[in-house]
Image (cartoon, rainbow, N blue to C red; front, side):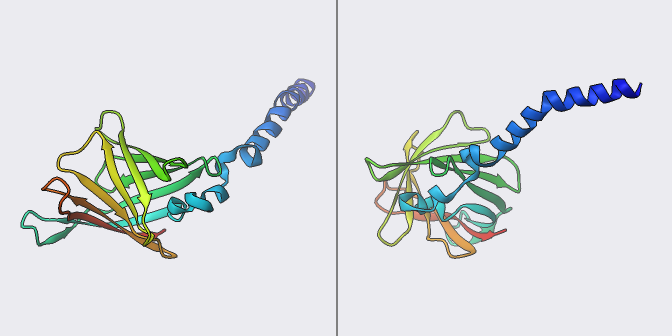
Length: 187
C-alpha cells in the first residue's frame, strides 16, 4: 500500500512537474497581459492614466433641465492589455448590467478606436476619441450613430480621482447639453 502511494505520488510529480513549472512560467513574465508599462508612455498614456480600479459617483440631469439627481454609482476598472496593445475597461453599475470598452490607439489617425458593448446591446458601438490640447479626451460615436448625437469627455486624471461627462445635442451638434456626469475615486 505504501509502495503504491509512493509510486502514485512520484508519477504525479513526474507528470505534472513540468506542467506546473510551465504554468508558473506562463503566469509570470511570459504572458504580456500582466505588464502595464507600455500603456503609460507615449500616446497610450492618454487612457493609461485611468488604469486602476475606481469607485464611481454619478449624477443625471432631470427632465426639468436644471436639477441633478444622484445615480446608483458604479465601479469602473481599467487594465492594460499586451503591455501597450490596448486598454480595456469594465463598467459595473451598482444597479445591474455590465459594459466593456476595448481601446486601441491608431497611429495613422492619431486617435483612439474604441469598441463598446453593454448588457442588452446588439454588437458593438464604434467610438473614436482624440486628446485635445487641454488634455481632455473627447469621444464621439461613429456607428451606429445615436439619436440624439452624444459626446463623452474624460477630464485629465489627478492622482486619485478624475471626472467624466456625457453630453447630448438636440440640434445636430450645434449645441451640447450635459446630461450625465461622474466622479471617479481610486479604490
